[in-house]
Image (tube, rainbow, N blue to C red; front, side, top):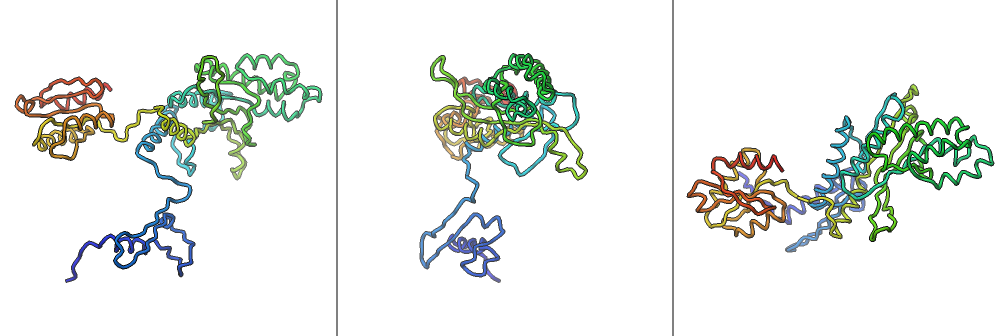
Amino acid sequence: MPQLRLLPRRAWAALLSQLLRPPCASSPGAVHCHSQVAKAVLTSQLKPHQDKPNFIIKTPKGTRDLSPQQIVVREKILDLVVSCFKRHGAKGLDTPAFELKDFDIAGQFDPMIPDAECLKIMCEILSGLQLGDFLIKMSWKDVRHEMVAKKGLAPEVADQIGDYVQCHGGVTLVEQMFQDPRLSQNKQALEGLEDLKLLFEYLTLFGISEKISFDLSLARGLDYYTGVIYEAILLQSPAQAGEEHLSVGSVAAGGRYDRLVGMFDPKGHSVPCVGLSIGVERIFSIVEQRMKVGLKTFLVRTTETQVFVATPQKNFLQERLKLIAELWDAGIKAEMLYKNNPKLLTQLHYCENMGIPLVVIIGEQELKEGVIKLRSVASREEVAIKRENLVAEVQKRLSKS
């Protein structure tokens, strides 16, 4: 009977190198392959009796490795965005666009109601991310076309267009433009202004009008927009009182595109649409940069552990194992150090560093009295509870946090 044994590391490396070799490569010079695995290039140059194999591991182009802290931040951002979308009745749709999170409303509805909700969603997400002050610049595709491209306006009117392109503001600016005969006498521009006024009424009811600035200098640069367009920017906090805010870039954008869907429909059916996109990658980069300079946008926890099981004395591994098994069986996220006799200070420091909220402590005195000490990591307060009430008390505290 043939004997089975584990292969040494060098043999496994050589085998793996052969498995990852592109099947279409008939010679060492062949480099083309459709295998996704082959994108992570692993080459092995092994010599007889060589102690350390020479591996060259490359990350596939267009990708990068993320640390546990980076993954936590990324998940928090995505969870906040997705939960906001769901709160507004969104249905999920998976696409290859991994850098953006989109929310779109399609269908024939009364004017400006869906548009106002999209702006509300954008405000909720940016406020929830706690990235600092932000502003949503908004314009109108048709009005801007009328004023900037000069279509339908007399030459003498076009000479004065720059006055409004430099202006920005809220409903007051819209009302001011209503009073301008150069615009009110142009049907298409007037229709746009009427919708803008209605939109600002809805934004006021949503409580977000102060976050919206009507700005005719805004241009999204995409031809498929047919109505309101908007773009969110973060504002850098001033170093001193009275100093002007500085923009640090766009993190979200969107608008109305009533004719885009019809371009892909074989029968040319028109489906009015309005939507927004959240720049997840841009937001992640901003948060990551702030973390590097010590600014905590999120409380970054790499685990979701709720309870840590500790002991101040030696030879209590079995009791800790009993406690942690009881917590696990109750659906509580718990962990402990994988040592027979860890120091209590080491265990408590671990909880503080990892952000674990509760510590269960068992020792000789607690075992003798049939109690467990429950410690709050934040306040460092400890209370003794009956052993049989452990799970109920932990669940009670966790429900309040």
